[in-house]
Image (cartoon, rainbow, N blue to C red):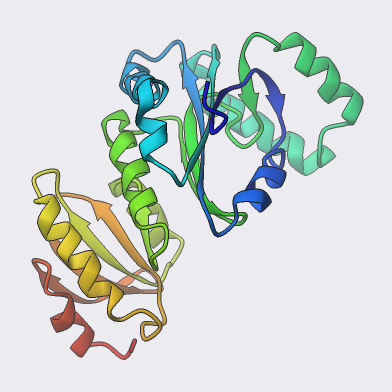
Length: 245
């Protein structure tokens, strides 16, 4: 198997990928996937993993991927998350001895403290730059999120994994320019827009995110509130209206 694609078992802590992240910093993207055997939709993710095994990983030169399988019941996800957060607040990091015991117990499956409910994935473009997608997510967007993130790796553009992530970003009073595309948006149009945005590199002082949504539009959000919006991919028109340059 390609060294950049590895199946892993056992329990890992939140920071157990720190070493590999430092090794590939500035040169690659790290994908960590927890497939759940109780989720029929994970077949869509499995198909992507199969494609990587069959040679796609060689074409995605910037990608390093670790994946494993969880057997946690999906209907217990909310309870698992709450219990994990309470445990973290009370005890901090797990005791080393307890972790060793858990690794032995879970040796045939993959559990990861960053996704305690055992379902989801994380895409790192840097040691502290992580797109984390957990529990109830659109599996059909998984492959495109990964490919889009790799394609945009060297640019200032980032990806929000769907409308749920956009909603959370705004609830957290985020400030950014968000480009919303649809599943029907032509790849050539999206690529042309990315190239146009690249011309503003260094001039725009807020993050720029692409997000698959319901329509083609670009919006500038400040502290979670929409300040200006243009329909279509008229990026230069939006910039002229904003004090972000």
